[in-house]
Length: 328
Image (cartoon, rainbow, N blue to C red; front, top):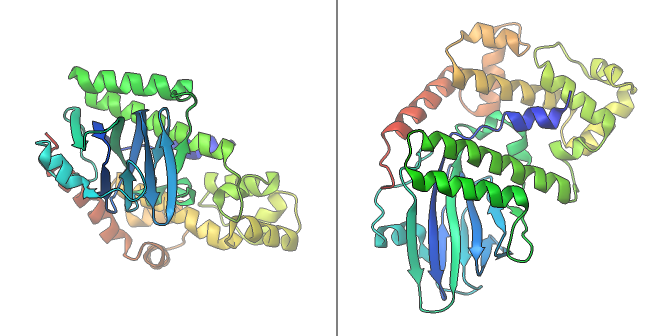
């Protein structure tokens, strides 16, 4: 089982909203925490992305994605005056507030800044219905940075954004769905680029994939969450002693074996709750719990609310997204 491919396959975006910015120095934009994953694709010029105390140089050809939607600033240079992005949208005649699940209605052109050199950027937000359904999202850093070279990005990035922009500007029937599918590919490729190029230090799910036997253990639990796993049974399945396996697993993944088993079960259960109307007893059985009561307690500890309430919240979020004001 190729665990990474399986998890990447589950990274399904719900929507994508985007605009093209023509920004003249000096300029600065700020965005608060959002429920999606903001991204910036630099077409021309240069800028600085600040997330907390960390500054990232963004050059023409680069793509940066913020998987966790954290507060950040995009600046012509460090120290530039900052304006909330919502105010910039209003100044450009764009009405409506972004909300998770909002779909692109048209490609907006945003102009802002002084009278200096121009930076052109594709700006947007990837939206996930619920990021807790996928362990990879929780393991990603605050910023994914795909670097270009000599003003151009990797071939997949150039082709994907060319197609994405063509569809967004076309207005043809079905263009929204096409844009979302291309955006899905862009996000997955950005994740793959990070995995291929970033040093995997510390602990975490991705670090666990660097060890063949621990990766095999992760794949087993991921593929069969309803199995009655114990530390001993997983250790035996991957050919390690219980003690060696338990220590190595915690050192690499940062969780005990059974903590990971529970977490993976909850990821799967969250997906089932959000996607359908199966009885809680059925879901409990499929993720390895003998009774709905024990499942209810475990899910509440993990999510902070019982499974029935979680399901209603997911359905309510879809209704809110469907009725949210469009950016048009």
